[in-house]
Each structure stands twice: as structure tokens, then as C-alpha cells.
Amino acid sequence: MDTPKRLVIISPEAANDIQEIYLYGYETFGKNLAESFKSELLSMIRCLSTSYLSYPECRQIPTKSKMYRNIIIGSYLIIYRITPQRIEVLKAVSSRKSVTKIRSSRRIKL
Image (cartoon, rainbow, N blue to C red; front, top):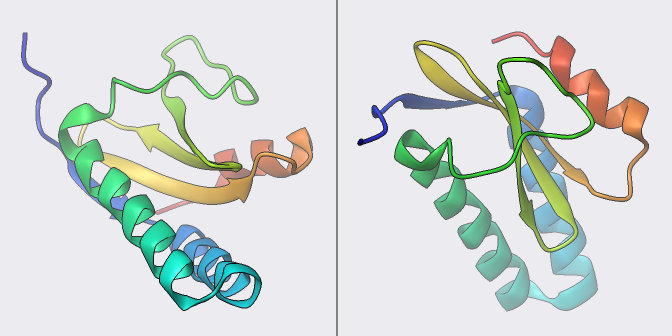
């Protein structure tokens, strides 16, 4: 059975997080690696339109419907929410962040 295609929306918080990850990578590893990592991140987010069920439930935000999921890329979690109409990318956080910080993604409204 094919997964229905859904629109992917990126929250302002997630867009800001991705920019901060890029800047950290730029300062730490240089322009080429920072751009490569950002490109990989955005590519994975774009693919969510059809692959949103491929990733595991976000164990820090459990629900019966498993609507909160995450992509693990390097030491980062891309947290997204599955709604009937679309996929909402909520946050991009370091996996070393506190559980409370990760759980706060639930309150992001789009």
C-alpha cells in the first residue's frame, strides 16, 4: 500500500534551528561540510511528503497515534508531527538536549 502524499510545512522554529545548525557547522567544520549537512537535512525533510511513516515515533513525545516522529541525522533529531492534512516539521534539536526541551516541540503551532 502506498503512503498518501502530504504537504510538508517547516515551522519558523525549525527553520531557525536549521540555520543555527548550519552556522555552528560553518564555524566548527567549515563551509563545505556545513553546506553539505544542511543540504542533507533539507533533502530528508523534503522526502517526508511520502516517507513520513518510515521513521520511528519520537520516544520523548509518545502518543497512541504515534503522530510525533523523528529523523535522526548525525547528533540531531528532526521532530515532526503527522496531521491528517500535512506533515509539520517542528524542531531540529541536538539529541543531547534535555527531554523537557524536546517535549516542548509539542506546543509549536502552525
